[in-house]
Length: 190
Image (cartoon, rainbow, N blue to C red; front, side, top):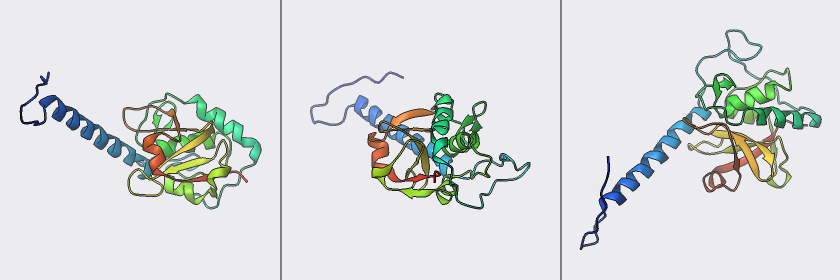
């Protein structure tokens, strides 16, 4: 549909302006709805090491520092993989916590969590000034402290699985959307 722009004498909004505002509101609503998948429990899927059942971590992870670069290498391998709600593999796509589960699963045999809030429970707080490559960054995108997450990769950037229709991507921490929603950094490294 083509919207013709015109100017009224009384300063009323032009049809093209209303259309742009409507599109912007629809896009923002879609982004919020898509990010909801990150904080929700995924569709029922067995996790690694738990045939037919969900994985429930029993203790905090404290991996050795020498695994940081292996985590980053694994994470960077799947940049541009499509977002899929509940996804946790390169073949099936990723949501934000599924990306983390897959990446960490490649460097440890430990039982791993699935949701963003579970990842927060098994990781340790990191002061923002001490943020290191391989640490997790959490965002409040839906009214919850841990509704979205990614992996910090250095140079002020993190990798995450953003939303429906998107792909796993590298984004700057000072991105206007994420900078306002950043809640904390956490680490699974001792």
